[in-house]
Image (cartoon, rainbow, N blue to C red):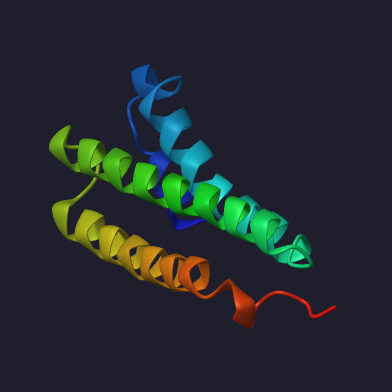
Length: 106
């Protein structure tokens, strides 16, 4: 939600590019985690959706870098958000490497 609020201040010419991309990828992280959780009956399905969430989180980091470099986002705020996504990525990787902790038993 923080990314959504901050992107309201991005230039109007970025509405259909950077603004749309960073909003889409950041929202997709949450959506893929939710879908992974509901698919935790099957290890493969869980890991697949967690991989999707990991990719979207990494993509969001790239868009954050662009926003800072373009001057649309304060560097300190960009670092904070980037670090938040580093933490999310670490947790996702841990879940991907140890899915048995999350899979519902048979």
